[in-house]
Image (cartoon, rainbow, N blue to C red; front, side, top):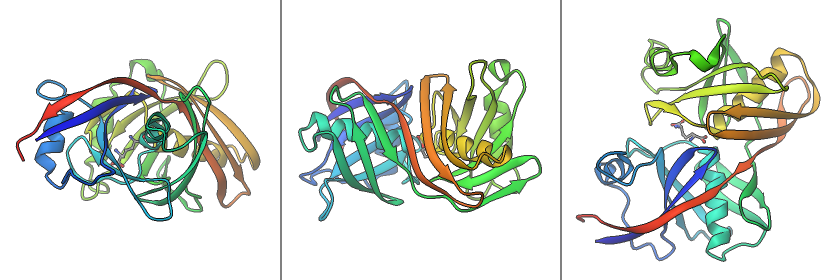
Length: 264
Ligand SMILES: N[C@H](CCC[C@H](N)C(=O)O)C(=O)O
């Protein structure tokens, strides 16, 4: 079977994207998705997603991690699929779509390469020693790091993701340090990719919320975050307990398109 695909990246978090509005592609085989995401033997990507029809929404986002398994919410993937929907002519500059963690509203620039994605509200942050643990659509562990640029994020992130607390269900591990020009610098080890990614949207969102709690920055916040793949921004309100009106903002770009043959 031949599949026409598009490759997108949002701040270096990269995805294989397929227009499956005609529902012709059965994406239940994890081996096919993991082989397409393989960076040596396949197209390569941190994940793969399918844009599908959904009654009451502009579209539905169905997302798989690079390991081929269905995933929790992908923030950068959500931003990229909004850019994809605009490219396909499904939407103009605003949209309401359905993802695994529920409905999402998003706005996209006229140029189609800057997306502001509303994330779910967050009212629970727990501690694990000095770290913060919270769910922004995906589960995240947020911990401070010194000399982050030279840190072995793979080794340290892998160890936390596979420790006794998190081994069963996994967790995404975010290392954070203050950035020179304000905001933060973040590097992330992603569950389901089982490696460091150049950006993690639900991850930088988790970091922004955790830092507001850590510094007791109630009211409206606007947090710039630098990642290996570029710059992102998180806007939100914090009342001292819960976080609302959370928007993850950043670039989303189409890199190439092509056809791939899969044995069905
Ligand atoms: N790997 C994550 C899902 C994708 C998250 C990330 N790509 C994002 O942009 O939020 C998990 O299994 O929880």
